[in-house]
Image (cartoon, rainbow, N blue to C red; front, side, top):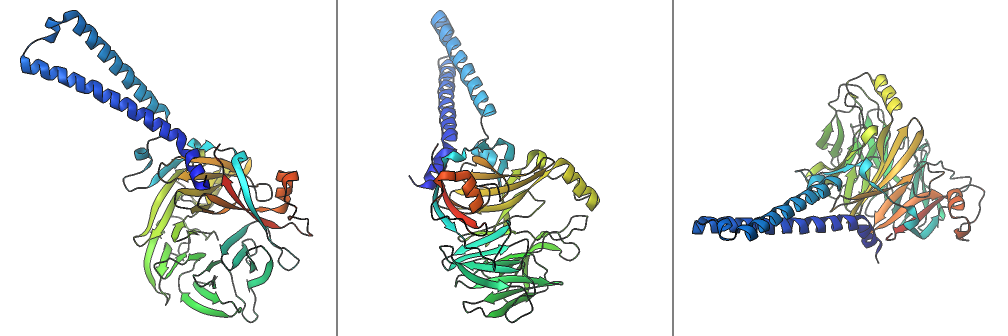
Length: 437
């Protein structure tokens, strides 16, 4: 069975059973109602009292009908009350999917099957931390340490180290700053370098030559390349420097469209987060302090999902109180934010990072696009979690970023012999499918 089919069945089996029961009950109720209408029609047509013709039998029949109707109605109400929301209730009139984090079912990760291991070769020249931004293409694997932002390391598709595809410095073909990177359709590496109140997008070709593509007056922290053309830039909550959190610029750097105006009352600083998540031709957008997930299409940037974070939701008056007071309240009550979001044809994959007094943890949600049903598994930090950091989903197969030390701890004797000890701990990309439980 294909992985995405197994996932769909795993998530949707209970929902389909509920829908079948509800439909059956509704059909029976309709039959009873039609019978009642037919009797009333007979009464009106013949102007007779059926009860007088067959007093005892008819009276008993009516009692049974009404008793059955009452029981079926009560059962239907109980099913609707105690079951998950129906599809229509999970989607707004605008088609936005609404998810409640606390209602998601817990998935046992014992149903996960690792299909492939890709170890990334690490040496003294490309040491990296734990918070890594990874992009894959046919030409290889590219990794940026978001804590350092000093280079983009390139690996072959099998994980062999190729070299630094880009680096920060003042030498020839070096960048003055590094915020984000993308890979275009031709396999070229594009990087975002923002300094002062300007942003530059530069191209690094296969020979390592650096050339400027776009220079914009918009200060951005991340960017993407929509299939419709131009570049999307995200500047975040950065008043008064940035008046709109997302803009679309053309090849000349001129702003063509603006999205998500910064109309809050406080000042804020950019968070240096990843905002854009590409999955094939699909493009999703998330941001801190916002529980909505957006999709960019020819119609612009529009919400497709809203997740109720429950007790970890942002306070209603967060944007109205003093900035330091707002952050103090977040530390006191805890808060949740998106770590990453991906999609394939049938599912959304959402990584939610939660900070609380007890520490930080993650919930990774797998959401059926059609039914709105969601399951989740718990994640931890990168140095502890095996399935905590997904980086893509394709046809139901999920790629996770983990580390050799984690695999040694979690898999023990099941660890492939190809994953040997090295001088340094190293990242490993694992491809996983979820088997039907």
